[in-house]
Length: 249
Length: 382
Image (cartoon, rainbow over all chains, first blue to last red; front, side, top):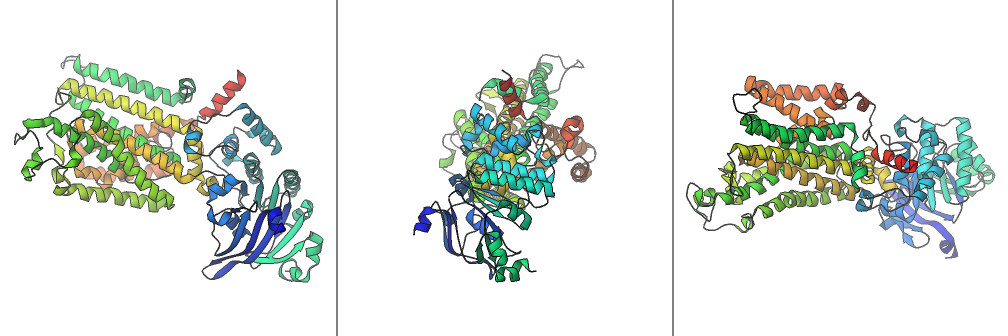
């Protein structure tokens, strides 16, 4: 049980079926405090379903999902899980398009989430400083008063990462952050994520091998809803089963 | 909320709107009461009543815009809250008739005497007092919206499904209120009102007073909506409208926000109905007709969804058109209304207000003024 006690995120024997199709099949995964983990796998391997289970969008049929070794995530809804400290970035960038860049960050900013506290909320000085800091990090400070809908695809991806930073969760789930980005943007995103990983635990789902290599972290390979291999990118790339299902295609 | 930032947050359109309402609230009664009928400046009482009615419709439109324009909840049943507010005040006006009814029964309204009822049903208790009726004007629609919303939003009923069940709600209420044994006058509803607080409802001064009160209520409703949408809560509402699941994943309990705004909106619709009934002199179950709620949604679309002022404007403009059409070409009105809706949807996504105020016609700015930003910048400058 030491593994459980030391873990930030602990999945054991998680199974999810949709109309008989097993999206996750007895999946077990442990992410430690302060760890950054990359999840790779072919389409349909269950990467997004795994994120859905962790964030409360999908309830597993079987298995345990524990956060900090204590909170049973299978019993909580999305908002409660977010308040516990799990943030999520979607595959397709989802920002609030008719809000300004600034308001997107304001909404994500860590703080009370109740109806009445929102009605009377006013930004404090430290909060404003924090917002400026986040905007600088994602390099959107100049465009803070523009509508998020007017940003380019890559900028939206960054804004969404900025929203995660403002939310300041203990664990960030990042789904294909480099999708649709230019090579230069992809490299910058890897730098940004490595910086974030200094103070947060991060799980990154990614297709782009160059990007995963840039991250230089432990890799988990998913296949048909379960873990196929785990280790450094070089180790898993050398694994014959991995080559067969994924890299060799 | 401090008053300063609230007024700064109104924006130019909001200030113009409130000023116009204030002028109308004073000028119309004065031109009606103090200017002799021969004068060109005289406003006839029929016009006062007509526009008083439009102001109530405008308040209803405002309440719909709050939930639809800012939170994406397309309610096709807001007419129910309007009618319930109307019934609540109608019940008080019935009690005020006292023994002056056709049957002269001091204890029971005429329709109950006619139905051979011996005593007042328990749910009519308290309506002898205006304060109680006013409280019910807020509480009954508010409570219905709260309970209905709690179930619907908790079960995550959204989009067209939610619209359909709101239609079902108002339709069910219509059928219920048509029944004589509900105790609300059945088919005929509540009418033959005499006075309120001892003041004759038919007098010109009463009608002018109700007009001014309606303008006041519309202004107050606007300020409430504006305060809500320019707060952080308002930003969360827009976030829910545009990306509901994203809002959940950053930790907001979406159903609580929807429930709050739906309940506030229903109470506003109730107030609109309560001001409408004394002016038209009758409330009957046809006010619950699903078509009424849909028509109100069209006012909002025509005026400009998500603009508040546009919703109020749309209600007044469409109803002026309706009054003219139903007089001149009655059989064509519904075609005109449908055509207008199609035209606005296709060519004026921001409604009439988008035409009047081109700045607002930019792609999808829901909170075009962004008052909170301005306030924060101002503070930073201090």
